[in-house]
Image (tube, rainbow, N blue to C red; front, side, top):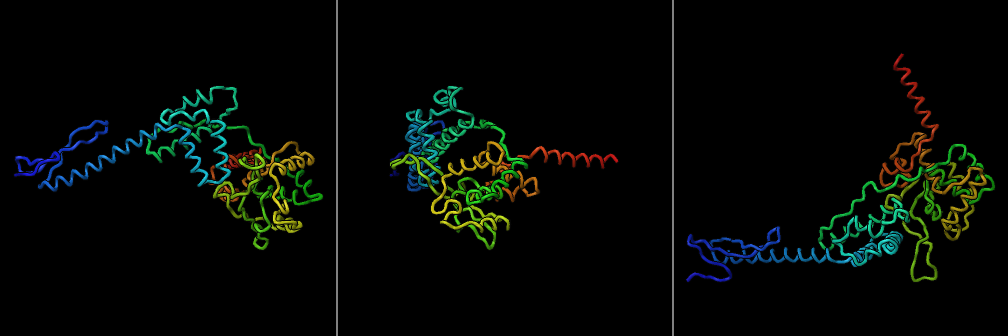
Length: 371
């Protein structure tokens, strides 16, 4: 007598047929057949297909479960992941944004997150603190949480549109040629490590945190190279005696770990400083960036060049380099940027003198053409 059972039967044409349920892409169960020459062959095929079908059903259930988790649940897991894989300062920044700006989404389900919801619950007041740049940052964080949920829970929650939301921002000012001359002359009188540090930033484009954390061991006097290995910044902390702490860490990004060749003039200036500790300008401990920023502003006022912020030195250096013929790729690596576009779009600001010189060259060119 032929074997039967488990929805397997022998057909009149001699083949064996097994019937099992499968889930369609439309999430509807239907019956499907599988064939073989023997009962055993069909049974094995069906067992494999049923296991695969159960896995697919479980995956779909997981996707649904992930979509129904709240933003607070997922963002908490995401922050824990960031704390383990990113710089502590990055984790603190992201945590602060979540606590300050995204707490209102804590009980919202992930599949309910949308741009309209953020506008309604967060960005509704046009006169609020939410500049376009801050909106851009908040949406970036929400999208990172969505990506995390999609990866961990195999969801398909769409990312929020965030294109063109950044402001062009205020025009970045640089110190003009006369201002640079006045500043350097002022810094050359009664020079010390603080004044020398500013001269070094003017000549290399170092960031504020990088100069504050620069150590003597980072300077190769023989090869005339400065190694950028760390930065320092004040960040929020919990569980301590103070709300913030000065923290030394690796630079802003992997590209910021770099070697900067410097001129013999800069090496002579650095060599003339007294070594009072491991830090070039702080001595035994690093200088607080905010303190150094304020000191620079006082120097700028005394030099007669008006109100300046420290980052203007970096922009001024970049513009000087381009106007004196340095190629953009070299400058990008000296500044520690990820790509040349960042350097050209954000840090190079041609002066009116430079524009005029270039236009004069074009005038000469056209004059030669029509001769």
